[in-house]
Image (cartoon, rainbow, N blue to C red):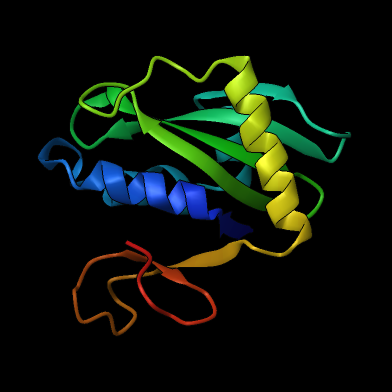
Length: 154
């Protein structure tokens, strides 16, 4: 399974984690995405929408907050290429708090998808992976890193 972030996803993520109430977002995201199987990601907490063809899906996945579940969690928007097991994270927002949204309207979703397709075509996406706490990580915590540079994303 391969994971890719758009610049917009990273920017929104960084803005969200600045708030004290959302400081654990990276840990929540790791637990709900990086530590799940491909099928678990597709099945749990996801609202499927049709993709471009049978090999892709557009998903709104709820990410729970640690120790409080999905009620006050986050909503991430993912374009998934099922055939290659590639997950492209294109947008995220909290469901509660200062930067919260109930949901994106369909026009905004279409703009985000269009921008994603353009970025994918230009190869302007960042491939990421999980650096486990046990993998010589000096922080002793799991971190999401850039696969190419090995630098922490957040």
